[in-house]
Image 1 (cartoon, rainbow, N blue to C red):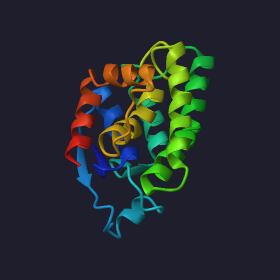
Image 2: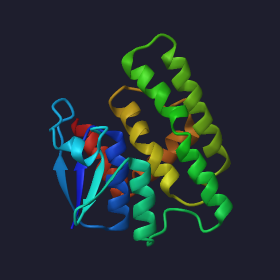
Image 3: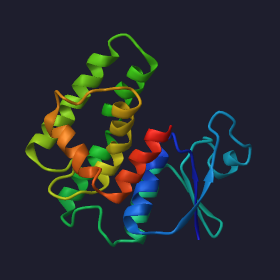
Image 4: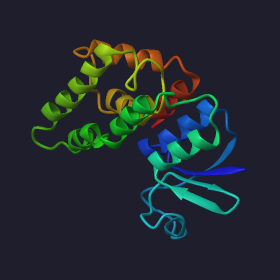
Length: 191
């Protein structure tokens, strides 16, 4: 049985939860209080962060690595495109997630000019989604999963309006029709 060391409020852990749900993988959750991390968590991930995936004593930290591992270990349904160039483009988008998450966290901390930086980052996503239905191309997949936890939190917890970003708002509405994303939206609403 897979165990996910998790924190409901953590968007990185949300990535792992969503992929596990999309793949239909049964798992148990060990909830971690991020304001009082247990010492044993550092044995599983020296950085002390979640998510951490564990199966039969084998431990894997870091959300992007967990997403890739689950995609390779459980290839159905596929969350990466079949074409190698398209897969590389998705991986690049995920690799550059900080282009969005850095402005998100700056805005959350209330830093000067952060709203403008966040709007610029939202505009980049809007431009991508103006060209295609999903961040990674024509099909839903890991790129969408990599970004959606922050978009849900920005909208529902930080009050970021998406009215000026119609393609992004439509994308988020489409994603929320998926049970895994609807579940995550419910978690965010409860925070």
